[in-house]
Length: 349
Image (cartoon, rainbow, N blue to C red; front, side, top):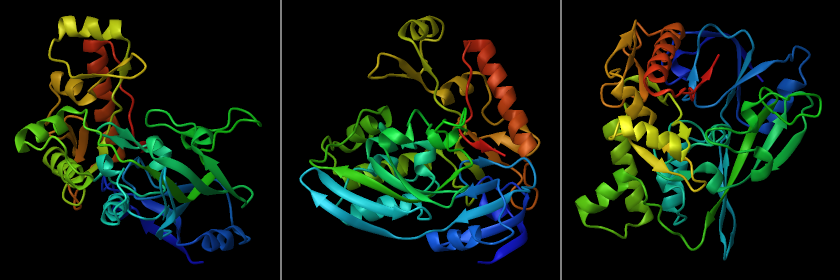
């Protein structure tokens, strides 16, 4: 197992922030990790890096960086309830979604074009257009970075919440089950349900149905629509560095929403099954006038206020400090106008 020294991280994070890792190891199998942990120079803590799509780096990383590149995808089982599909943590998420559809196994199409790796998807409990990862999740395998032991978690044990999981929380005490910094996910399994039912409740998808006259789209059609919608709204990280949606959509009570609607009738909102209301963070940010505004080379994307971008490109990239200064200014602005605290989605290191 080769451990590289002084590795440039700019090509390994989609924001394109220039920083370096003091040491970095690329893992293509569980055996690679076992060999690394058996070395006499193995030390914790470490930093686990997947696709680098949900990350803001604010300086060089001194901890050992574990770049997870574990490949593989396969059908494990097919039952009357659905298809049980497994993917290695290093697989590209969007490519994996496209592959499942090509095999005739629908269910992930609403989450097309979300950047990042399969291994990172449970950490964030990714979701889009009415479907969250937890809706299709079956189980995962991971390695305890303290003991080297492999363990398996089901959905309940992952503690999924809105853009949240047990992997984002440190243990509160010796008995706590937070796994932040302790676990490295190696493989993830999904149960894609039979019979397949389209999820079409979002406004953008309803518009596509109206435009095309297709009110009974196939899974592939929904995939194509989601890809087109996301490409129209969101910048390609290969062209303009970004970390995708930068803030979580806040959830409020029905009374709070009614109060906001009384002042801002056009606020975009979505009723949730539990009676709460989810507000569109991008709309709130846009209403505060942030589209196109910048701090240094960090800016708010002109087409979608929920996305912060790297205006400096590869040659003169924004810094993590500029990104976080801009993010904090946006949070203050939204709170002062709406009384709502926006929470960032990306991991900040």
